[in-house]
Amino acid sequence: MREVEYRSSGIPLEEYELTRGDHRRQKRSEEISESVRLQVEEDILTCRADLAMAERRRQAFENVAKLMQSFKKADHEIMRWRVRLYCGHIMEMEAHYTYTDPLSAGSYGRRCSECGGDGQTIVAFEPIGLRGSPPKATEHLPPPPPKKPTRADLEQRVKSLEKENERLRAKLSG
Image (tube, rainbow, N blue to C red; front, side):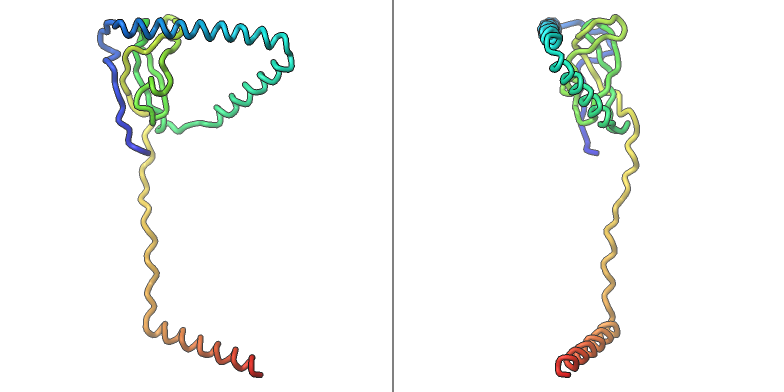
């Protein structure tokens, strides 16, 4: 497991005053959510008009769900984060340990479990720690070098090769 230096932004458990940047990011997040909602509604209408397309989409989503479930990660590969959302509530979230912060893991906004607010942007975060302890590292020792043959071993090997040589010469001439 590689070493990762995790970032923090603000302190989620302390008082937090929203900044203009926080308001701007939340507004942008809401605009994107609305745009996506409209596109989804349009897509649903298209699928209702074409049942074959709807079936292909359903199958594609099932395949993606199966694929995502197959990528289970061990507890020591999951970093836990404490985040403060735009609404002011604090929650925990998880991401793969290789991400240095929850934003780079793609978690710009969340649904708040306390107030139910959708798309609440993250305004402060700090790492809590891995979900589980990494397994103990096992030392891989290199195999011992082959034992050097003694003089007696080498003389025995020479004698056996000379006998084999004589046998083959006799076979060829005979």
